[in-house]
Image (cartoon, rainbow, N blue to C red):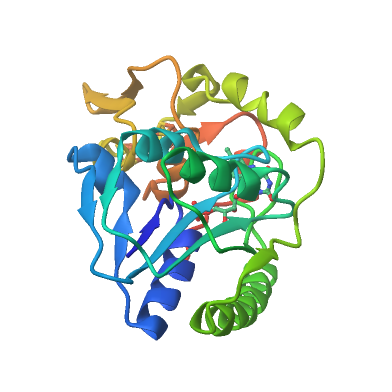
Length: 246
Ligand SMILES: Cc1cc2nc3c(=O)[nH]c(=O)nc-3n(C[C@H](O)[C@H](O)[C@H](O)COP(=O)(O)O)c2cc1C
Ligand code: SF4
Ligand code: SF4
């Protein structure tokens, strides 16, 4: 049973590859949160995985919320965490390990994989070749991780961690303000952003998205999935392009 949170598909891709090659299944944290599904039973010795992107060197608020609410019955044979990230994971793997520990889940291994950085207020994803190369390297790394998971490897295999993650993570709170998101005249009123949002922060009113919560997860799923590229965050996102993992 591999739980994953993914806004733009990187983490879902990694989780799905691991599941496919180990005969496991993936469970979307977003679907669980939206449908209030929090109770899960493991078959004897079943593997348990948690996969999510790194946000501000820490965890997306959705993942924290889910872990706090979930109940997992039965004991697992092997538990691992996987974070996907654009550059550095900071303290995300430790945070995930600690959160799971608080729920009585002891993890055996943590892994990380560098993938295209979806934080386009800062990073430019408009060069398709560069993005494809990052994903090619990521797939090689995921293949190595699969081998380690098959062997039930134990240890800290997150080589992208750096100290002072906590300080940077404190900035996530401010980053989550929905007032920083905007919609332009290209919006065709399709409603995809409303459906896409993992925390129900968007409502379509008079054919346009309105952010109805002061804070969201700031996953940028609405920005990257919009068919008209009508949602922006600041001045740079328009030129930095949209991205979803195919
Ligand atoms: C709000 C936000 C914050 C992010 N912070 C970090 C970060 O601190 N370090 C990093 O390496 N990547 C960071 N990223 C990049 C994502 O972790 C990375 O692109 C991830 O693979 C996206 O996964 P997904 O496609 O499954 O949503 C951030 C992305 C977002 C949207
Ligand atoms: S996904 Fe884009 S086009 Fe569709 S309603 Fe939202 S902003 Fe408008
Ligand atoms: S409003 Fe957009 S950025 Fe915020 S959580 Fe919803 S989909 Fe993600």
